[in-house]
Amino acid sequence: MTEDPTDTTTPGWLRTSRDGAVLTVTLDRPDQLNAQTPDTWSALADVWASLDDDVRVVVLRGSGRSFSAGLDRSMFDTGSRTGGGLGELVRLPVEEAQERIRGYQAGFRWLRSPGVVSVAAVQGHAIGAGAQLALACDLRVFTDDAQLRLPEVTLGLVPDLTGTSTLVELVGYARALELCLTGRAVGAAEAQAIGLATAVVPRAELDDAVADLTAALLAPPVGASRAAAALVRSAVRNDVGAQDAAERAAQVQRLHEIVSGP
Image (tube, rainbow, N blue to C red; front, side, top):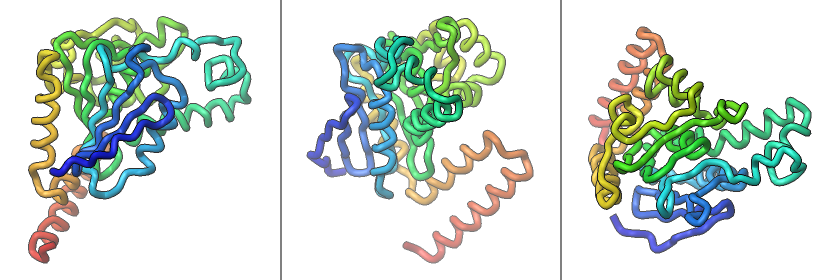
């Protein structure tokens, strides 16, 4: 692949760079442990809107010593009437507040959109919104010092950035319930054992491990890769009959495309 020299910084402390079929999205606020705000989520949604069909892998990273420590502290000011914080949300009509959160969720949900596979490179802490951002990705590579935590319930809140559905998909109902209700930290070794982490590596090897995984994801033909990813995603919610039908349809389409050629 030929590296695109374009390295763009967007509002919300988000930096993007493109290397052939790989788009790297970096949370770039290391002095605040990549704490997130609504501007971050809006910028993530804008990345989705700008994707082209040639992008096959999206790598999500955090600069500095942590992936993301979660919400910016200013978001917890319940007296605030502006800036997208909790105070502003509570003063909105219920329907409008829910619609505002739906917009926030869009910055997370696209990471499992058709056509791309997303990989989170997680070092240090992934807390709250940071944990949910890592969970939103298809795959996660952890450093051996990484910790993931969903503390929202301990603060009187709930995970609301797509984290509950992605967590249940990864670890099952009982484990997801326990992690959400206790808010305890999950270290890298446990994360790998229960299916949260695809791989765990020393911090010094994170870049190489992500590069190796990305290369493996790009190795199969693009059509087959995208069709297989779509099948695995649909299997989470389809019943057996529907999933068998989806496999049949996808295979016949693949055979026709192989025979007809590019």
